[in-house]
Length: 407
Length: 136
Image (cartoon, rainbow over the protein chains, first blue to last red):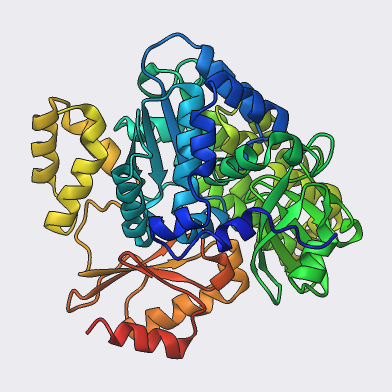
């Protein structure tokens, strides 16, 4: 399966950066079409398309939007999640950089469908260099009347991975610490300022103009039974050609990393982001989809020279730093796992380490407040499953050293 | 003014004073009618907010896995040697402060860094020397 550049082609052909050239390429025609439809009809199209959230969680968009539409309350919000803090992910940056009008049009379509009179773009501060052109695009869109009935407010983050998590993001907009919330209630019922809220990723919103223009039926012919459409993948690490690639859902990981990105001598691949699953080099024919493995679409390639325990250590160090600290399983669990991995790396591993890693991992998965803590142990559990020998060797070496030391 | 302005007010204070000062936080607390602790709690939550002085320019080198795989640590060491400061420190002339940061979304241009709001990717020692010089 070669690359399937649908969104990327749309981005490439969206004009040279000002609204006139976007309109000349057919920009905002999808919005006009959507505005001529009843909101419920737009909702129905999104449901038929099978579109699921592209930020990593994959929640069905049509269902989410419908919940918000039907929720009680006069004030409803749409938030575009442009925090893109997931390690190895830069597709939203690409969209913001090269096609802000496509995002704005997608947001306008969504706002119409759910009845949101106020919208936000929450953009990470690390992307401040994109803010100028984004603001200009919003101003030009407003001036041409494309933002009738709602407006777009930009809220910048301030360097916090957890603020990409939807409930922490809402708290951040509300002027609170970026801590996660207890659920229920869920955002479509009670979200930003306790109002019905839809939060969607940049890529999710950017696909909408195409779905409206070319039809949900067309979109649903792409991909697999359970994962419709195409996905932007971000390949990095030990590859010759890192970058953003677009493939149909259900594509082969091997094709993406070897044929397109030029990876050789692969040891393992992490798919989905910092808490993504680990695919060893014996399973490169794994298909990429929600029902198999996907996440944000981040694909980090590691060659055979890389040390897997060191990789897991760095990953947990990241999660430990970025944990909001509110719930004990994540705040303390990441500390404990980090301590164990640190000793393994230093030649101080002991027999009970593997069991303790698994016990803490299971507790975090079960009891953490949000996705960060719930999935933090995935790299640990996956590497224990596929590379257990590496852990055991580290422990055996440590025991040997211990036995050799004079009493 | 409403509580939702807090993060933006703190950012304004940082832009004005170079960092988030205690007097700045007290003024914000007063204008929003909230305890100082709430302002402090929010200011210290975010890694791009500093309650201590910084250099005129803030260098942030990415230390996450994709940049690490492309020699990110060598880049950080090189900057340390060039500027004679460790991460967390400020140069003697106050020009640069140096920090290690987590993934900045430039993994296709690894190893990468931010200086203030500007992104620099595909780094090597020669490029870094030229970049640092451009801030003189």
